[in-house]
Image 1 (cartoon, rainbow, N blue to C red):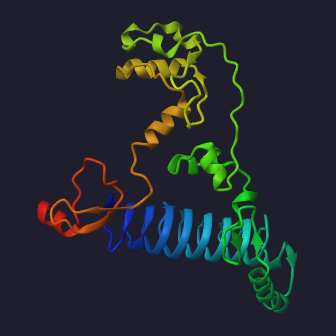
Image 2: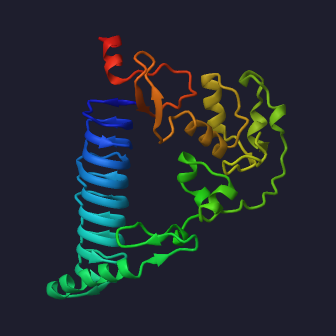
Length: 303
């Protein structure tokens, strides 16, 4: 794994953390599991928590939440709030259930204000009802209290989210999981320069290339939201010349996906230590050529 100053942690790209398990891109966190992109520290006792952080405590099934939050369950973009359930886009609140876009409120259910006593009486009844009569999606998946919002009501299609970058799927694979898919809009760019006709050396590129519409080498046939064509702006051309870099043959979207592929996947594999043969968990797939050691053998090699 890529990590520094960690104690008893697993995953990848983790730093200054302890007891962080099966997590990726996390810093200064403690007792967290299945978390990702906790790029601001101070997070404790969190589970299935994606993105943001900063002193998030007791957070479960939440995303883009953070900054001094406590006891947030099923939240999307909940900030500086405490004891918030099944809510989104709420800032500086406490004791909310099923609320949207509230600020500086307390004891609210479905955006309606209640007294403390009414709230504390109603919430257990709502949770009981959610468990007895849970929502079932078109794929037959059951969503009781505590489950994240159903995927089929997502505001975004699978292939227009970062999920496609880290867990790429084809259209048929995504639809088989019940995810929606965005069909690319038909592009009618009048391409003036084929990708195969681009010079290999930047020294052979003329300044008028900034007026050309360049064909993307993937021609929209990839799974990377290909734009099919792109242009080079003068500042970009100047940069390529200063660094002696060739003109790219891929559009910006496809270039981005190529860079993403250079990172380890957000997945752990079972693999054997190259020295003692002990089975270990690692983000390096078994078919990759790198030599991978268990922690003990690694320490022996570098000490």
